[in-house]
Length: 140
Image (cartoon, rainbow, N blue to C red; front, side):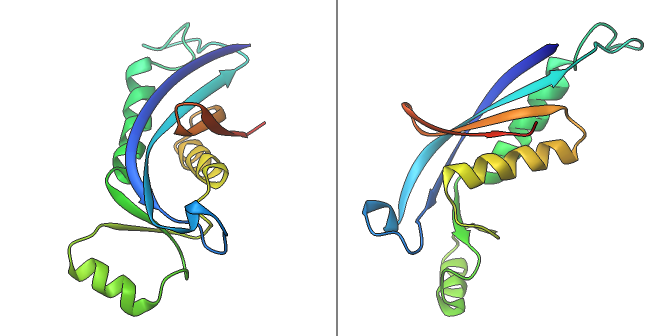
């Protein structure tokens, strides 16, 4: 079995709906995503022969996804009133509306699924909210 790993970071704000603690308030993180690829065999031909995947291709996809989330306000769909959403957007805030509660666990799964849509053999995504706290999603 062969594997690769790369990481990227993005800064964004969020809050947790129906949570009774500090995280119910709007706050931000420097999210760190660590992405693992796993493949049984190396590629057998072409410019990526004897590789899982070219690191340049891998890093480009992971960093492009991180850039999509960078400096956004992650909002769980339906968690804010439409008038609030419109007001935030009219003030110039960039909202990233997601169909799930914006926990690190759900972000790890979502990021994994997005990268797998690009046909990357992603086996695991770790999402760090802080340097010491991480949630993982395992695709296998």
